Length: 417
Image (cartoon, rainbow, N blue to C red):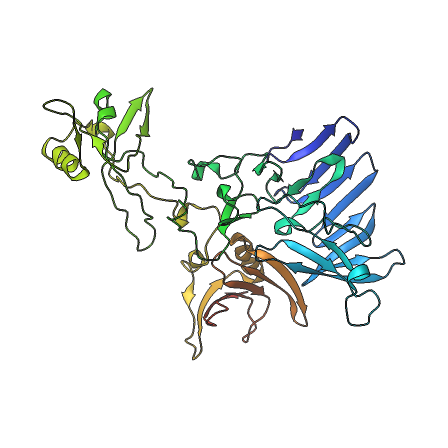
């Protein structure tokens, strides 16, 4: 396999009965533009929502599935039934136009998968018409060519047989506690994968989930305790909670080990721990006794290495490469007051800025809707709110809108041209 500077595969050669070669072409941002399979002589081009095979339009998306170009040059509207994770479970089309679906002839394909995405085999695998693998598990393309069975997310390719990506996570430095190849934080029931970058909650309950052990990030390696050989004896219980926004980190003692110029966090213990400097025979202390002992006889610390911030935090919103909607409001000005459930803000930049900030939120299930006033895009954020960018509003300005579908409350940013 050959890779480009974005760690995306550009060529692969496979030997054996299903062997052959495949090539990929990408845009500068990593978006896939073309796939070429030498064994079948097929060239697939990806142009927005339109997919061409060997220069002929193959299919394009609509809000409830896709439109397939049939052998007669006509258009068959195919509808997709999705599960709660966004996986396409069933595709069907009313070929005869009688307003009902005939299971034997008009259900095109059924897919059932294990939690990590591997398809069930041996039942309900009948295929009517031409197989389409452009939207499958979590809405991603399944590459069956050369027997690969890869699922192509935007930033990496995934192998459901082993439940792992085979490319390094582009933001792995922010999740040091989990593998750089893990999928959905190794828990696809709790998390769904977001384009091969990070896991999003499958329930829409938010990011912080201490019950399922949300992976943590150490912002400052220096926490407390001593530096040097005695540090391995100074162990304490540490409870880490998120410290973003109004949440506070509960700071409890821990230890440090220094070696080869690197300071790393020591082991964490949840029960009794060994005393740092027992005065008599070695014994075990309770946590309270240990804290009192350390407070009475604090270990020496090299002042040159003492930081100002001793906090250990989970990843904060400001550290993520994906922006949050509230981040967009920092440089916005309050707009006029409304009588309804919408809060208005104003920024400069026009429709281009609105679209850029829509993309920076990394929404899922993005759909384009054509209206008389232009094309608008709609997507969903991790917290379940709906995000919309449109080239118009009641006063004519381009608008980026967040709306909670449960209570109807929303926030709008209007962009001055």
